[in-house]
Image (tube, rainbow, N blue to C red; front, side):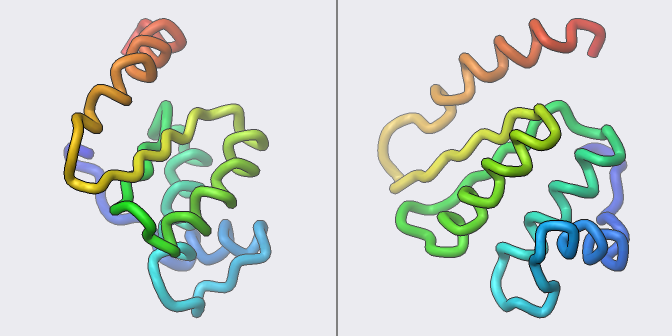
Length: 106
């Protein structure tokens, strides 16, 4: 994301706790949600792209929590689960079109 730095962890923890997610939960779920909330609340993103290998359990958990965040902030969160076949980038085409229509000044 260009020159953007890693978000402040303490602030991410505060955001996670709003969704009853504890920062000490192992795995990627808690920090991914904290980072997403940080970027959304700081209005530095127009969407969140959530990419995971097929059958990734932390990814499935994160995806389910992202539905609530998407609803709360009216920001698209795009989940892509891939297995190494096909063209996962093709999933992004309609989303990119929508984002371009939604924010034509960027």
